[in-house]
Length: 156
Image (cartoon, rainbow, N blue to C red; front, top):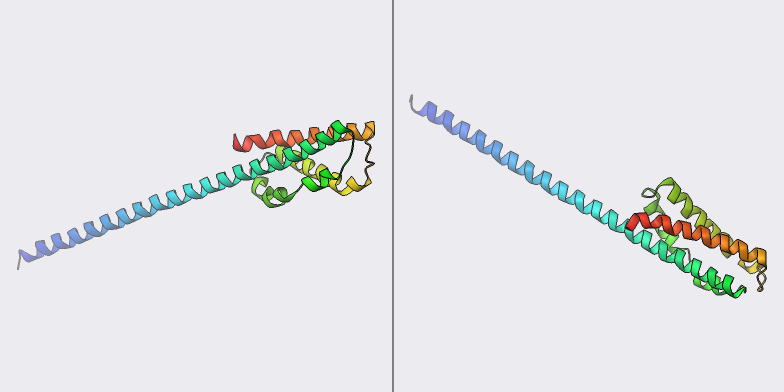
């Protein structure tokens, strides 16, 4: 009977060590999985921000190109309303709101506000652009170009 007590103690110690090792390995596996999932989420958010910035840049570039064509022709046509959309802005502004610096965010808000005003008031514009209207539109293109420059920081 005296030999069975140390054997029982050794057996209990073995079970405790085995349980501790199993617990530690399961904990380590859970931590590794959690880190991998977090990395995947961070990468997904980064990709979403890059996609948002690229799409907004395309939308702003199209707007600037249409405005520049109208400036160069000195004629206001309905091309602006047909070719300009604020869809990407409406969809992706929340994605970039947290990512961009205050200065970059302000530049985007001003650019899209400018575009909205132009869209709202475009029916009031005389088809033959005056010099003051041309200067105003050139200023608007400059505002849009500044916003485009700020978006580069997100995906470069």
